[in-house]
Amino acid sequence: MKPLRAQRRHLPTSPFSPPVDPVVEQFALDDRVAHDKYGLGQIIGVEQDVAVIVDFGDQKVQIKFPYPKLVKL
Image (cartoon, rainbow, N blue to C red; front, side, top):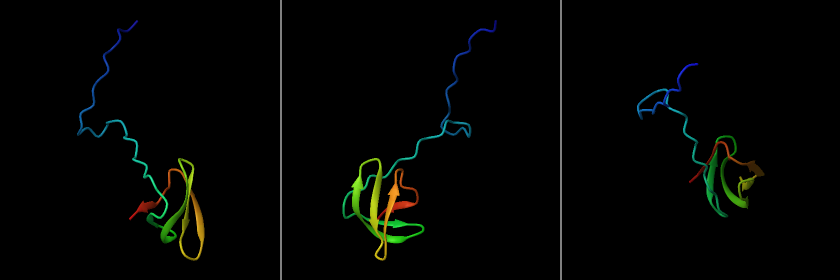
């Protein structure tokens, strides 16, 4: 049997460091947002950690968690 090896620590500059979880944006009612596909809009509904409803003027769109391509302004 091989002896157990100690787990190596990762250096901050290492290209092999473990991936960092992205920070998920938190939205509230009346927040102004921008979306890559739909453009500028305003949050009109929030279902915490499920979805947000955004009014983009000509349409209302439900965007599911983790809110891809949606940025708070």
